[in-house]
Length: 77
Length: 402
Image (cartoon, rainbow over all chains, first blue to last red; front, side, top):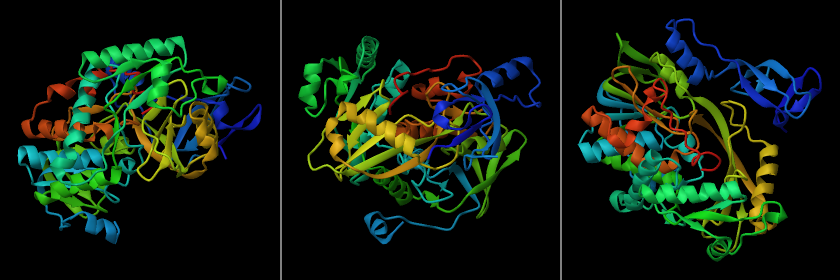
């Protein structure tokens, strides 16, 4: 069975209806404005564990859902 | 590693030493190939390959084994063509049967835009040393009689490109041949040895902490697959990598010989036959970044459906098994190889879903980089700093199918 995303408007729906949206977070240690731009454009946190992320319900209500998912297990917390 | 495999290849397992010239983290194809070429081409044998599980147990053992060089940008065509050529002589060189079989790949175009893209692919391949020709539907039918040119009435085949040098090889045997060749010349390979931290001195990496104790080296190389972000963070590096699962499956035995590899960008799928006669089918990555090895039914349903529109005989077959790997995807679908800005730490990553075909060339070039201390010309365009310099190597030839 597909991973189910709990859409607050449509209820649990399969992940195939959604588009992934990464929530970018440039680390505070990077202070140089140019380096922050590069980081924002290309780099990823890519954590192995819980991650805050957004999903756009493309084939549904067309609204954003924000949630926390564990990338090791795909469990939505 | 079972008894049969131990007899098949001659591995020499030894106790780890405290210091090496080069430590390679990751005992997959790229790590083992780098060790192999360091030993054979540069006579550097004081090398350790550290693998946290068993060699070839990550993406090197989970890929779909296609070897080809019909990429979309000059730099990539040159690099992968080098790899195709090294694969062709790898059996003679290692004296091991890696089951290399030249099959040719047919890349289908289902619309006018796709026809233009395949014509462009043939042109750019020819210009930079790979053999690719544009083929009409009639020629496609001659190369692959099983194909349905109407595409199930939905995806008509209007042409395609044919790359006769495309091949497949047995992934385990590639890993074992390289590991054996390296170990025969004195390289240490340590399985079940996980790297827990990097030892640093200022801005220099001087060794690794492992589950078998600390080890020091002049050069530490990361040849880690999907889990590379965490390792690079230990060196203080941020990478443009996102880890996505990639699924594939095989059907039961198909009695007849199915010769070419068939791929389609529009259908996001590719099909080949394994040496056992199973039909091997793969597709694009899962949409969610994840380290999970779960396989899903949705993938099977959509991928099987798309493959059947091109090759209707697949309907008679049943799905035998399915598996997943976690891929280090780069934003421009090109690999990242070379120096990192941290002294003593080099990496080869961003192999996403196209790493198997690059094993010999990637290993050869990284070995040259470590031995000479200079970036070889062939891989200079794929350096990590290309992102900061805004010269990404966006390659549509690798996207879609692999």
